[in-house]
Length: 265
Image (cartoon, rainbow, N blue to C red; front, side, top):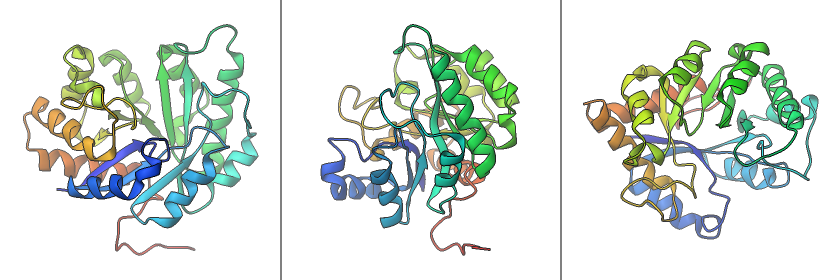
């Protein structure tokens, strides 16, 4: 069995200071690859360095919708940074109306810039969406994000939202939230979504799945999320793992499995 943690923040504490242990624990739990996701430009060098140092860790570049006060790159800066071979995606980006209040045109404008940068760099988007599904989907449609595609990370919407995202060509990624007893809408989506359009993630160090809910999350725990989704879909965990791993590499075409030849032309 070979799993991918399609969205993690292993540079965040308390994981960053014990990274060798975290990576070894992941390996013991069949987590063969992970995508360390950028949330701001100040910490991006840490994220980038992890991808440079480890052939099973990939990186993205982007500024989270809730980040304020730091560097807010323009389209050209984002696209140029994303052209690096170790960077496989733009994000995380999107809209968050839960933690941000007041006039949010700045957040929508940042999202637009990320979409345009993704198209210029020809790399997919990692979408953060909280309490903002209608506007998120509208901006993705209006700015032709289907041209590069992407993933709705930590998907928490209902089937109606899922269907619209799938119709745009996006993938859905399920975090430990899907294992919570109260997450019935998300569980329905995890059952119904096409097998070739789903992924699993931790979003660590947050959102640990059952049986570790409330504890510090880490990539190793994606195994529990994958096994839970497999049970929802009445399939073997190894089959679910294989499908979600294949889906990751189908979307993130600049990521390469170990042993694959890389065309630098």
